[in-house]
Amino acid sequence: MADERAPASERVTVKRFPQRAVYDRAAIDAILDEGLICHVGFTVDSQPFVIPTIYARDGDRLYFHGSQASRMLRALRGGIAVCVTVTLLDGLVLARSAFNHSMNYRSVVILGTAIEVADPAAKLAALKAISDHVIPGRWEEVRPPNHFELDGTTVLAVPIAEVSAKIRRGPPIDDEGDYGLPVWAGQLPLKLEVQAPIADPRLAPSIGVPGYIANYRRPRSG
Amino acid sequence: MADERAPASERVTVKRFPQRAVYDRAAIDAILDEGLICHVGFTVDSQPFVIPTIYARDGDRLYFHGSQASRMLRALRGGIAVCVTVTLLDGLVLARSAFNHSMNYRSVVILGTAIEVADPAAKLAALKAISDHVIPGRWEEVRPPNHFELDGTTVLAVPIAEVSAKIRRGPPIDDEGDYGLPVWAGQLPLKLEVQAPIADPRLAPSIGVPGYIANYRRPRSG
Image (cartoon, rainbow over the protein chains, first blue to last red):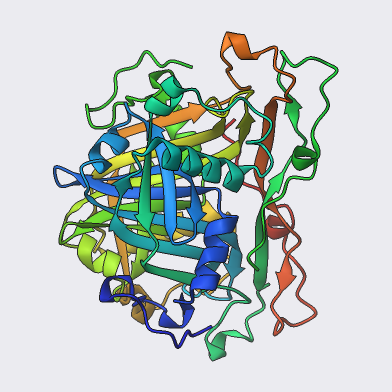
């Protein structure tokens, strides 16, 4: 798992379990493209806040959005430092000792400064990117934002530059002396599964579930 | 959904979609008890960091832990402000307009200062609480931490006091004028599902899967 590539900065260098570090952009992008929500961290009056929100990757930029009324968006429009973290939880790792228990996961940490996407055409493109990220095919079917809705939405972009990923996969690693203990050990995989769609109570009965919903699944980064 | 209780502070008062705010401790605790990982936010040299980690709630305290070598733990031992966020993603909400798309989710935000749990007995109890939170029944079967492992682990506690939750459930809310659009609308529920356990390649074939693994599921807070 050790990645020979150089990290983008000291601040995104993985210190703990460096063998889990991944600095390869293709691997990082695959995690970002599979995830649905990120956690955005920012600091106001020395107090950090961590807020979950949807996002999309568009090339070397990560977009997220929110209402003009949102505390997060108002703070971030000032051009302050952010941390955007995307975490995919893949399973529980059960070792023979309490100490060697772990989780299998894939996570990405991006450090940077969010900038507002103010140009209306670029803003609309970013909103489409977020929609396409969450549900490909949806944007083409629904009513697009009108100018009141567009004006009421703030879109922010963070460059995907100072970034690293951390990945743990596979079985537990026990101390050699513990392998003889009579304890079950292994992995309990976890997966975010899609359930059957639930129609809106006000949906006309003649409107069926479209294929992009019936067959919905996240891209799998492996 | 609107919660008539008073929030603990202005900083944890939900501003955006206040009808989704929940200040009731039983509802907050249920979310914390269902979640597996939290995202811990802290600030070093004006740069926020957001790190995923496992945790446990023990009454009015939330514990998390890590290696002495961890950047997060070293920073937090200094007694700095943190934000701990737990997010459960319950589904995609598909409206007839792009603007009214949403997610169903339950999230908790805790603001506070982490303090180190230094007393060895309290530390061991906190590690057991984390183990019990993730996999009830596991602690009793495995080799407990020895004093080297205990010394190499830092445990932090954050009071669950300045806290709020935000919950969105149910169908999309469309503009009245959009309900007639010929577009499927509704919810696509998502659920973190447990897959079949995978035995460690070095597991003795005589050791079967224990019941607490075979029947593993998260408590459901509703």
